[in-house]
Image (tube, rainbow, N blue to C red; front, top):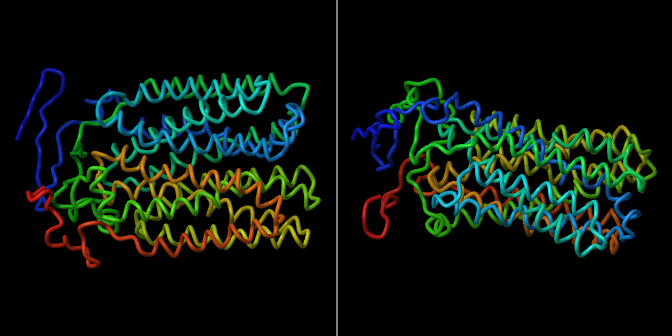
Length: 460
């Protein structure tokens, strides 16, 4: 079928043997006014801007506690609440976007304002309760709107090879914080913390808003014209598509839940995100307690953030060639095992080993995020990806509480040895669960399973 409007050039809708529809004919320039690479570069910059809230927070913890008169546990619970709301808004934001109530641009602009306000609240809140409301609730919600919009818009614009692009954008959320880690370690004190935090708030608000102004989702079922959706073997992207075949059909959120795979992804992400947040929150305090100097402590976190971010891009590229599930299992195994290495290096007081295992931990503790972001549309399709990924990503609210707030409680009760051991075990358990993942509607040989296209008695 060919459709044409005065605003947009003609397109055609192609239906494959499974009943899935592909909308072909509109170029990215027709829709965006520029190449679709814009929807990689701009989300990447915005992700770097908001990364400071999570990845540099541990470096600021000591000054925040002393300047505000909070306990260390209070300070980390502020981050814990931030993590909860950063994850919790992903699904409602996605639902509003998929229903056409909120545009991608609108989500980014609202998120920019809230994320910026979060830093102003962290700077001026007179007590920990208002800091939780301002930075934790408002700032976390704003960061979550930005994060979820940036991550899933990439998959919509690159449905045929989303792994590497999604990983690249996701990586900005980690290494974008590196400069601020060193600022918070060396140039942040009770005398200037208002100025530093207010400046960070302005920086976050400005960069995210400028990038978000140009965001736009493609039409439903959009597919790049240069890639034949029916004859994958005749185009250059065959390897990526053969290792990660498109979803059998477009799943609504409740349909995705009923497959059993979305709840399994949710549980896997609870465990591995909890381990990740724990490492982000406590690596610098652990290094200081082990007697390492501030340079080693800051460098370990800087290394962790850089490798965390670059690892996301690298594993995304690998997953396009090796397969998403295999790459995910490998990454989570690395994350779990590295927790034991960080603990061992700290216990024996070896700075080189500590930096080495910080490197390994950084790789494993972030690279699983783009894997889940790519697996969701691989399994359930792109049309409802903002909602489906929002459901999976909401698991981070549980993982965030466990990794930061509950992590502080465990450290206080069992010490770092008990906490790092528990984190490592959680990582290994998550890898075991990931082995059970299967693309809905397909057999292990890759064929469409009989009856997989039936929805409420009708063919999808």
